Length: 336
Image (cartoon, rainbow, N blue to C red):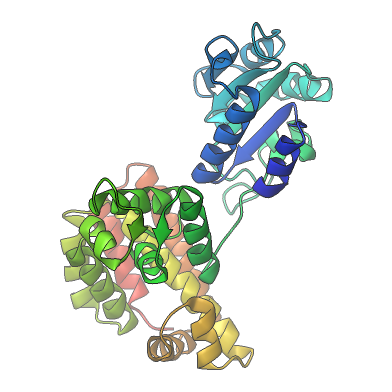
């Protein structure tokens, strides 16, 4: 089920009794807002009939006990669990039994930060996907390229913000494709234009992102594309002095994915102009990207993407950012 399907159920007053959202922080926020608005339209009942837990601090039994409690004021009770992926696996049977016969006067909302499906590190799905009925699982949407631009503009419009296409592309260029981060930066960019501003253009994005950041990011990606290791490492050092390494890594990972996609499209016979339209980039820029991508073999691109993933895990495991990122950039500068 996607967010649109959940929205249709909510409009019919048929929210599932157990809902699991995973893999997308912005999707989790949107679902929480939707469920809260549906269960507590006037906001009053939330004080008495809303329980919030942290999956890192409680067991499944505590959560299920709260879900089995009858509401006091509202028609249905909301039991919210953040970081649900951290709930102990020994409670899987308890949650499965509850999900099979849930309390009709409660909505159990499980918000997981991570993607719970099979990954390169976890070959099997997370146990939550087996405990929660498929009809209650809200799956993340994997958007790339043009779809991210369209989503950002449409999602911002839902909040009354008009984000120009160029501004959306500029935000994606720096922030990456993380939905929550993009929307957050778009909101900040709107505020940069003044308290009564509702339009986000290049000027507003530059005020938040900073022209020096955009310039440095462009220099880094161009240096990697040209395999200028020294220039790439110097630019990386400048960026790391002010920016979070995860943000830079997200950008580099996206560029590797883009190169792989371009290579596949080119091999399938797509002309540069059509590739440019799909990516939302100027044909002259895409022509250079095609030349760079086709100069690399699929195994080389797969190896680079795998290295990006490895560095992400090391950074999240307290790896030394400067050394990890420098080693990665050096490898990305290598040819096929």
